[in-house]
Image (cartoon, rainbow, N blue to C red; front, side, top):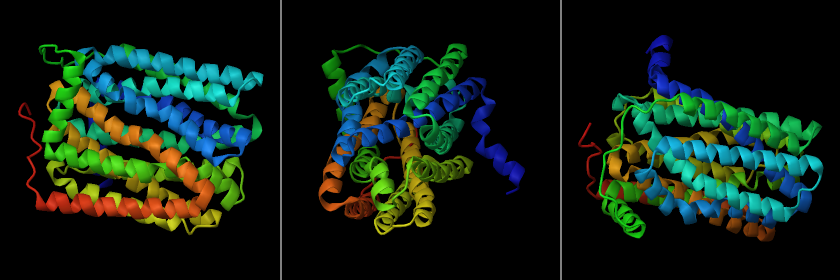
Length: 416
């Protein structure tokens, strides 16, 4: 395949004007988001020096996603997804600006960080399923939906590469507050892009049940679909034992590598760079989603192995070499899983299923963050990484066994 053909195939979803607007606005905003994530982690550990409190803050920011996601999924299936996104982006902007004001004024405290983390967690509970479901409404050619999902992952992780690198430098020179301020201002880009987007496809009208019944029907639908059930189970395990490694990176950098914030930024940026490469690789493929089981298995296995290797790492250069592989494997699993789910679900259940995706991805992570923080305090970061990597590998093998020994429905949407 020529480079020109590879590039054209990789970015084919950008030919759709609505998606191009969403891609650009979202990309700018995500750089600020990743700056804030790194700045909060560094701020908490600088103020407290406690791995437990660091894990607890992450828990407080992510547990609302788990608790509110079922309700959010129903709202996404009932309401305008564009309006939901506009509201969540405005609240996220206010969150970042308030963080900036408190930090720059010197009045920031741990309890304020806990409250703001919970607030942002509630916002994310509605934002994530709305964002994932919104793609279906702005991509007229559904053959490009998988490519759009992969490109979303690439821009997310390009920001994950750029944001932490900038944040590490800014924290070193100006402090965490400036990172929060830049994040708050970056939300104007996504708000403008959302305002200009014209939704092409409308949701099918359906009879509205009680919210509790809608939630129950969504769970029943997901559990009865073997593909959805298998994907969400593996993703939940990976989020529980693997994803919290990022929460412990400030401790790893400061206590194991004996380095400062700029090194943390470069390591997280390296992870993001690997994720971008994996996302672009997935975007360039035309493999149908019903053939992605193997991709999910291999990427999950590699992530577990690399996390185990990280437990034996004690130099910056070795960590810098390992982090891109960890980031790439993780995002390949997430993007491939997302694509499989999008093809497996009908649009009337899309919001609820994507809310379960968010619960598995973001909802299990807080429990993992809390557990990993306690484990790191008692047995050390390296042993925590090793145990998480081993369990992630076992989960990958379990997923592969079930996928190969149970019949699966074909991932073909009846309307496609």
